[in-house]
Length: 626
Ligand SMILES: Nc1ncnc2c1ncn2[C@@H]1O[C@H](COP(=O)(O)OP(=O)(O)OP(=O)(O)O)[C@@H](O)[C@H]1O
Image (cartoon, rainbow, N blue to C red; front, side):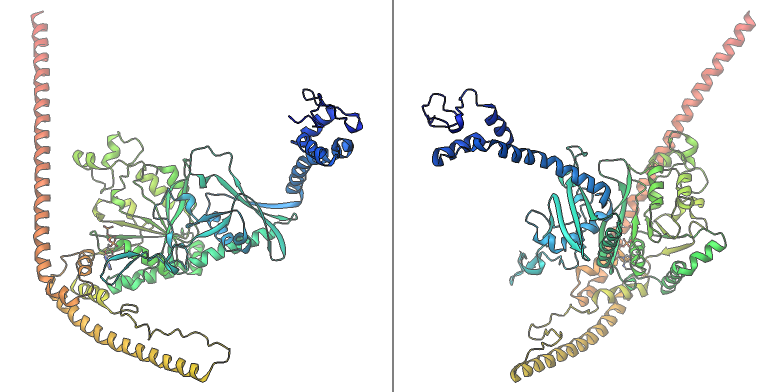
């Protein structure tokens, strides 16, 4: 301990200026107060005194005033902020579980203030707050982002590609706190705060809130900004089909639609189906979605809804058509699984009431949805009415059926009740139309049914040609021929440069001509091979998915696909035969067991009857004896 310490020098002979002689064990009250206002003050002042002989405690009143201001400023600033927030600021709070969050955050990520931010959150996926819900989550959301991650070296060995455009893009958004930025000449605030109400469980990225604030009581600037966020976000989806899934909000029992993926829209032409049917569906939907049609419906008091049932064997294109048609009409697609354990009548009702004005709702494999007539599955009467014609189903069949949590009547009410959004397009798919209740597919609920069949001969050649057709990008272009034909630089170019460019342009045109020529020849060849292929594969025997699966094995060798087609058909037929035999055996076994069970039950019943009869006769005899 330094004996010359002005603060703690009780034992020291050093005289304190101003008559202060602080004691180590009991510092004077002034120093104690200053120490409270400025933690570390005594240490600092003793240091200063030692070297400069300036005693800071002399300036006690001044320091006190300064300390009080510092002490109070925190409270004052909080109060001022609270006052401003309540009376002279407008704020938009954005819920993390709403799609507006994605829109807003993706807008923020593109702003200069976010790029300049010194403390930021780095994301490869701006929607990662729900990563745990949907693993397939929007990786493709960024238009600029390429999905290629694997390349092959000269020897054909896979190598990962982690450079340039292919690299997964990292996006930066400002971290927790308040960030200022200018928008249309106004100073706005973007705040990201930790959501303290949320429990400690749940992913970290979930526990946050974001808000946008502006000075002034008129919030129109915030609305403009949010509108811009939304339209920017929508632009990214222009050539995509956005898919939403119905489920529960994370950690709650509240139902909500969650955006799970956006895909490049499948061209409608790539779904192979009878052209008349396809055109009929397109015309029907086009007419339904026409802006004047809603009025037409409402004038006549008819609910403005349209339902389609796509039925047929597995792998015949029902799902593909649903997605393609949604993409064609630029509609979002909302998928809900009635089999999901979280899906009950209330949740489904809420989801349907939250649908946007125009969209496609897809209920896949509706026959397997395990609809019951009431929630209480034990009631026998319920089970006998399970989807299937109104006729009663056999007990053993009932046992096998999955028991859903949604009754058929509730589903019907939801589909055409007041809660169901008008303007939506309902598409139901099934592999077993015969299992569906008539009420579910009556006109008004299902306005058009489309049957999907196994591949006909014309479908076979169409699928063949679709797979082997030469499309842009299929033929590798030599780098010397790949010329970017953008706007010419305005800077002066030398004669040599001009000549060079002309030469490159010529080469590019030549390459394009070569490509078209080659494409024509290839397509002619493929058309002939397609016919050959269709003649080898039997009509209406394989689903388009099976044919596609086979052709993909030879995707670069159409000739080989034709050569080996007969062998493939043979193998497939044998497998199918085996499968049919196996199923027949299973059915036989099931019937036998059922028969045995029935016989046993009958026997037991007879035995019981006999016993009862015996008892009755002994009673009668007893009476007689009496
Ligand atoms: N008619 C078709 N035209 C083009 N491609 C088809 C067609 N049918 C099936 N495919 C192809 O087969 C695959 C499976 O098709 P999809 O899922 O649409 O069949 P699905 O009828 O919905 O089957 P499931 O009943 O099993 O759900 C897809 O890759 C699709 O490209």
